Image: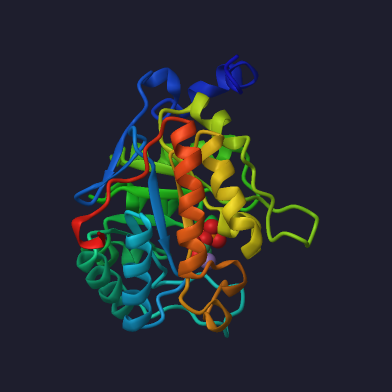
Length: 292
Ligand code: PEP
Ligand code: MN
């Protein structure tokens, strides 16, 4: 049974470049020197929601590398619901990310919010994140479509699968085929969770597109206690990787503390993930020498 293909019918041809029909082999998106999304091994991205200080990044990068992550995440440009909330350190934050990642052999993924900042973020990052709020920001999609770095395209907060894949198509038609999709939850009605993590989207989308698909269990749930179980479930469902928020002191995080794991909790989640990864035949990322 091919999930979704039958029901999509001729519509599948509307996203012809990212469609499975265009390319039967799964795409592998290489990020930095060592990370790959969609290959045999999983990609594990981890780090704080926001870049807050050099010390925070150094501590977090050391811990997540030791636990087995291969990509450092962290926002230097933050989309915030309130105009009074911390909006990120900008270029200073990008520098902290780059330095900490290089020290521990990690690649860097970070969000770009504004088409005018794409060139700046390209200079520091290995992968450009398009956040949920910008999934249909077409000028931004066009700009990253012309960028020389891979793109992590998060699913819009109320986006259909069709809209998500069409957004990916916008990037690829711009000339950048290095796109990874990220399921990060869609808006539901129950305030017990921040979003409803749509894990069925993983096998569904893998049958509609050749692009790699990862899962964000942090924004997908908004609840620390749910992050490790959903990390394991994502890989059990066939995800090509995960992106997890980790903060040395979640209680004092500038953003998303309630859904951030401590380094110890992340290390424990990685031990569980190793078992699930072995069960589904997907090795964890190769460890960097600096992380050993
Ligand atoms: C984030 O990764 O911190 C973020 C803002 O994600 P999203 O766009 O999925 O809300
Ligand atoms: Mn966040």
